[in-house]
Structures are given as structure tokens and as C-alpha cells.
Amino acid sequence: MELSTTINVTELFTAASYGTTVNPRYYSYLPVPLPGFALYAFISLCFLGFVIGSIGNVLVIVAIAQTRKLRTTANAFLASLAVADVATCVIVLPILATALISLETIITSHVLCRLFYHTTLTFSPVSIQHLILIAANRYTLINKNPRIYVKIFNKRTISVFIACIWVINVLLNFGVAVTSYGARRFFGKDYCFLEQKNAIGTLYWLITLLYTFLSCFVIIPLFYILTFRTVHKSHVRVKQDHSMTDAPSIATVSVHPSTLQTAGGQRPRRLLSSSEIKLTKVNFFIFITNVFFLSPLFFVLAINGGEITHGVFVLILFPIGMNSVTNPLVYCGFNRNFRQAFKAILKL
Image 1: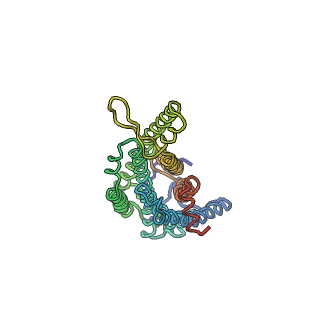
Image 2 (image 1 turned 180 degrees about the vertical axis):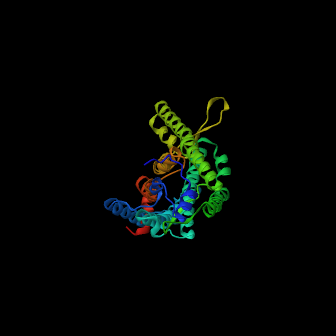
Image 3 (image 1 turned 90 degrees about the vertical axis):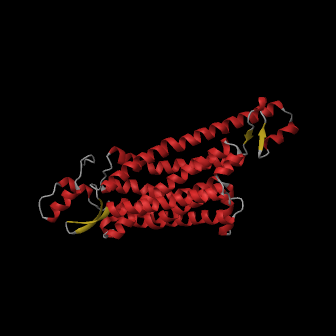
């Protein structure tokens, strides 16, 4: 089965409507049921993802709202990201479970078809944009003067950042979903298809591919490279200070916040606390897991020119849905404050 073949959806439906012969290669693009074992396995994972992801991300939101240690401006991005993850688990995964059986099972109307694509295409960019802001937040906190950090990342500006992300993506993807997706009748059945001849949909996919590549493989990694370079330099400075001072004065080095005044009146450099470093590592790990789950979508669309079969569609969309399940597990496994907050909420 070739994925590189150019598909003319208009030709396909016209031929079907008039009862003329349809090229057999079109059949590979129709929704088909998966083999029995794979079908039950995928549906079971969707159900577990729905339960664990919904509960886990709600716990993240409640923990940040109720726990003083977690109620920081930086964690506001994590709370907003958790909202996107909850929506993915509640809306995308159930519809995806039916799509694993056959898209004709539920997505048989324009409304459901567009809802499916609108939610899927909204929450993925929202997640990526939150990861960019989280990386920029860590970079600014660790590399820049505290006054610059407070000026860029305060309650008002963070609220504006988050609001802009949601409003822009919801409106943009609503326009794309309405104009580029819809249910079409084919051989007596309704299927959800992308109108591949639609200029808006094509332009959107091209921008999405470029944006995903630059975000996941250039912008965010660059932020973390610069951040961890500063973290490494901080470790080196601490070791040098330990070797030059006696035991009683060593304890003063790790006090946070603290600075070292360099010779010649240079800008003082901050010594990083262990909590800052740990949080930065956790955020970086969250980014790595997101890239891992989103990469199949990017690479398949890039390699095949935005053209995919139903089977490949299922395989690349499934990790996107499951990605929303992993974030609470990362918080719980790598952050003691989140772990304690979860236990307090659950009365464990």
C-alpha cells in the first residue's frame, strides 16, 4: 500500500456517487476495523487513559490551586496544560476509541466530524505552546536578573499569555475544522474526511508542520540547552567555592536566593537552589515525553506529504491522546511537592 499516492477526494466521491468504477487504491483510505486483539488492546488503553488521565490531571489542577508551595506563577502554565490534558482525555480519547473500531461508528455527521478534528487540532498546539512558555520561564528564571524575570513572568502577563494561547487556538482551529473537515457519503456510508483540495486546510497543515518542527526540535531544545549550561556553570562555581572555603562557610553557599559578586564590577551570578534545578529537570522530562508522543504525527505527515491511511491515522493519533495521561505521572514521580499534594487530596 503506497502512502505517497496523491488522492483526489473529489474524484473519489464523484465516482462513488455516479456508480462508476473506483480505483482500488482509494479503499486504503477508508476506515476499516482493526484485527481483534489489536482492537481490544487499543480500546482498553483508551479506557484506561480516559480514567487515569482525567483523574490525574484534575488532581494536578486541584493541587496547584490548594497547595501553597505549588501556587506559583510558573506552575500556572502547568495548570493550564493540565486543562488541555483533561479535555483530551474526556473528549478525544472516547471518540478515538470509536475510531479504532471504525470512523463510521460515531463520526457520521458534520458536527461530530468537525468536533473531533477541532478538539484534536486545538489541544496539541496548546500543549506545545505551553511547553515553549515553560522552557522560556525556566531560561529567564535561571539565566536572567530576577527583576527581568518578574517583569516578564508576573501574574498579569502569565494570565495574558495563557488567555492568548487558548483564544487564538480555539478560534483558529474552529475556522479550519468548519471549512476543511466534514462527513461525506461514500458507498452508502458516511465518513469523516479532510477536504484535501481546500486551500485553508492545506495551508494549515503546512504551517503546523513547520511550527511543530521549529518548536520541538529548535526553540524548546535551545532554551533548555542554555538553561542547563547555566546550571552546569553553577555546579562548577559551588564546587570551586567549597574547595576554597572551610566547613562553616560552605553552608552559606547553598542559601537561596544568593549571588556571587564577580571581580571588576561584573553582573552578580546567582547560585541555584536544588529545587530550581529539580523543577527544571522535571519540565525538561515533560518536554521529552511530549516530543516522543507527538513525533509520529509530524514525521508521518512530513514524509508522506500530509497524506495518511486510516490505519496510520489511528497509530499516530493514539499517542497524542495518551500523551495527556503521562504528565500527571511525571509530576507525581519526580516532584515531591506534587506527590504530597496528591496524597493530601486523596486522604492517603
